[in-house]
Amino acid sequence: MSAAAPSRLVVQGEAIAWLDANPAGERTSVLTSLPDVSELSGFDLDAWRAWFIAAARRIVRWVAEDGVAIFYQSDIRHRGALVDKGYLVMRGAEEEGAAVLWHKIVCRKPAGTISFGRPTYSHMIAVSVAPREVPRHPGPDVLPDAGLMSWSRATGAEACRVACRFLRDDIAARVVVDPFCGRGAVLAAANAMGLDSVGIDLSAKRCRAARTHVVTNEPSRSVDRDASPLPEPHR
Image 1 (cartoon, rainbow, N blue to C red):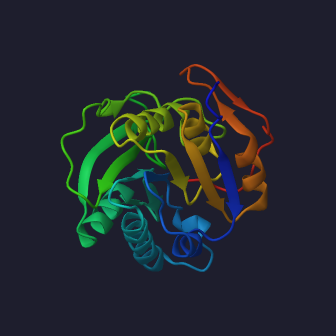
Image 2 (cartoon, rainbow, N blue to C red; image 1 turned 45 degrees about the vertical axis):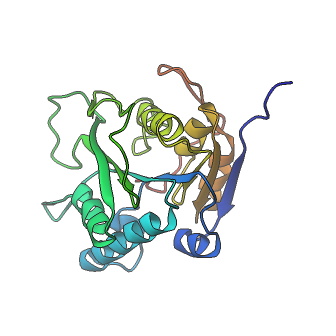
């Protein structure tokens, strides 16, 4: 008899409130991207920085000792100055007393691309509250291609695959949670790896897309059953 297909639950709601109301289950890990300052109405840069660090700490604290939290973050420019979100994740991990397992650089554009706005790379950082051995299957330190994206700011399918493969093979995760799931790239990649997934997002439109977004396990293929463009920015 074949094993049951992996499940997917998408909840429309506020991420931190959901974490507060739903303790992490056994063998549950997080793969997520925290939102930019432009996505939080009423926040200036200083307030957003404080929120970002606190949210990263809350996610790290939420994950049980048998899980990890992986953050996928693209730096931004604010009034000409670079805002390093990799540093903000590291700051949150340090303040929470957690260890950084690895820090990868993911190229969203080919190496050598010149950009005057958002940098063409992203950070992918794995954090654990419990001491761990050196990963058996850490994957590449630099991903030359983030993979296919459902739109210009989505998490690339290949980056999702690398992270979910690590969660499955090194962490023995069963469930992957994305508290800021957007259109569901993480959820689809987790399901393609045989893992159950849970996503939370404030936007009803993004939640609808997240429930149907599908990727295969092949790096060159991606299918999105709801391909209509979404105006809301993603991480």
